[in-house]
Structures are given as structure tokens and as C-alpha cells.
Length: 379
Image 1 (cartoon, helix red, strand yellow):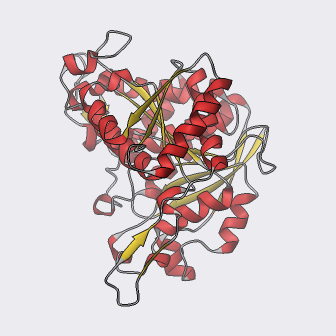
Image 2 (cartoon, rainbow, N blue to C red):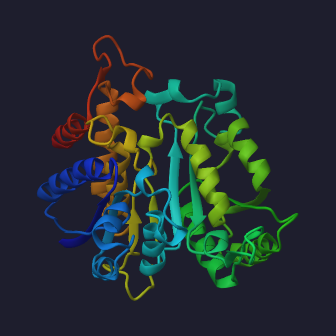
């Protein structure tokens, strides 16, 4: 099977980690009989430097012709003083809206190899965890193309007042809720709707729509929680959560909080999905943007020390959600676990739960970590 993958290596460490992710995809293609045809595009800071805008129309149109998009990172201090509409991050907003991806899935779990990196005590990790183990495995589903980030904004005439508007429609809420419910059906069948319904009218609409949509998923246990309480419960008992679904702003904050509990933000992938019923969807699966959540990290760019595992695992999510290649996705995830079991660590996860004397911890760079995953795939 042939798949067209739009590549946005982007800025900072983006090109380094994307290079390792595509090497893994190509190795899988050789092993399972798939061909990944890459279409490299400029977006973010790099596009600003060459084209004068963060997302050229030609790049968006080329991305629309592909089956999925794999992105490294965008942004950097050299563009921080630009006006809002020219910031590199506008490329992300433009790609999300232009490709119709509205649901951001951010899995967060505590790998046993990285237990020492989690700041929580064992008794906290056990609390509320149905497995009775010291750990957690949750999924945050964030609405991605509505809410405060896309609402009306501005300033008054004398520049003394600024405003940003939170706006949601029933249709926007319903479609991300259904994505979250479908995910919950494949997991622990628990879904928590997170909002601020005691204050925000938009949150009250979220609850109204959730009450209706939940009737279509009777096997899923639905609960509701205010965002401030959820932020606290993620620290007090993360094991109580299975799937969290929430608005754009709240999801942005809560998913970053959850990432800290996993050991390193460099480990975490994400998937931003559209609807499988969208005419742009290919192979019967939703269009998706896949990216590690770590950002461009310009301070370590070009030093061969960035952790590529978040990007590699983002490739695994692409295989699963946009291509329906579950066996291949599981092979990538198993290979990542294998290299961690063997004691290989990039600097951001070094010193965390070193394995046995037979397999002592060894610090490796970006390229060597990618090569190690490739070798593990061959086993």
C-alpha cells in the first residue's frame, strides 16, 4: 500500500526528530510492504524566512493532497517579536483549520522504565487506579479548532483594553465528544467531560451536548468535572482517569500538566484528527496531523541530544489512526519499549530507573536512539 505523507520538519529540533521518525516508517514499510511517499513542506519560522508568511497557501494545498501530516515543531526566539498574525504558531492554527482536524489526542502514561521521573509518590499513583498498580494510562482529547484560540479578539482604540472571546457551537462540541467516546470504547470505557460550567456559558453548552451524546454510548461511564478540580486530581490521583475531553484552552493546559507526570515531554506523541466521514479522509480513516508535543527547543537544536521518541511514537499514531495499520503501530511502540528496557536514554530521561547490572543505563544522542529503535524493529 502506498501512503502520501506531508512532512513539516519545521524549526529547532524538528528536522532532527522527524528524520528519525521517517527512518522508522521506511523500515516498517520495507518489513510490511508499504511505501511512504513524503512531500516536504515549509511552515512556521522557516516559511517566514523564505516566504514571508508562516503558512504559504501552496503548502496548505499540498498538505491537503496527502493522507496525513507529520510535523516536527515550529517557533523560536528570533520570531517572538513579530505581530500575532506572523508568529510561527499561526502555521499550526492554519494547518489544523485548513485540514479539518478538530480533535487532538494526547496519550499520557507512566512507563515503568521512567518511574523515577514522575514526581508523585507510589500511594498517589495507586489511588483511584483500577489496576491497583502505581501508574496511570490516560488520554486527553482536546477540541482543536474552536474556543478561545479561534474566537473574536482585539483591543480598544487607545490600546488599554484587550479581549479574547470563547465561542462554541453544538456541532463543534458534538464532533469532538464523539471522537472521545469512540476512544473510550476502545479503552477503559470511562469518559470525563472537563469544563467550567459554574462560570462559563460555553461550558454549560458542553454539558448539555454531552448529556445528549452520552445516550449513544451507554457502555461508557460519563462524569463531569470542573477544570480546576481536574488539574488538582491529575496530581492527586491520575490513575482515576481514562479519557478526558475538554475545550481548546483547557486541553492545552491539562495535557501539558499530564506530560510532566510521565517523565519527559520529549516522550509524548499527539494526534490531531478530523472526521472519518470527511470527503478529504483517505483509506476510510481520518486525516491527521501527528507531532511530538515538546516544541522546537532551540537551545538544543543541532546538538544531537534531542529525544526523538516522541516523534517516532507520533509516527506510530499516524499508522494507527490515519492508515489503520495497528500491527505496524504496535511494532513501533514495542521497539521503543525495548530500547528503554535495554537502558538507552537521551539526556532528558537519563538517570531515570536505570535497568539491571546486566543492562546498565547508557546515554545516547538523537541519531543513536533512532538507530536503536530501528535495530529493535528487526528483532
